[in-house]
Length: 118
Image 1 (cartoon, rainbow, N blue to C red):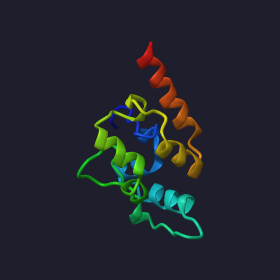
Image 2: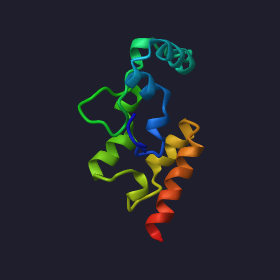
Image 3: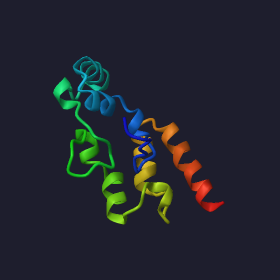
Image 4: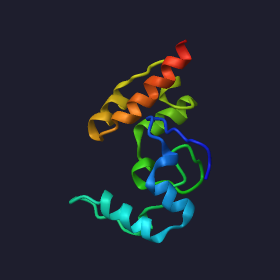
């Protein structure tokens, strides 16, 4: 497994069950993730669980990450993650935090930001 990968939004991709299932080609874990992440609006299948992480380019990417505004912005600004951005925290990042519970991700970015400013 690769070293720690922090997504633009602060989620630790390398700890993500979708990335782990993909790298291990673990069908049972893909089934578990698909079931856990399915909603009334969207039913996921095990074959939907394919991701090499938010920072991957030209590789497999989970469908929600493909359309993520925070990810698109981070690539456009060529920052390692949002903690490195001059506009941190911005509306896109704050909006994402309201849509998903990413409390740990926010703390990760704040920790990185503190180290950068030290």
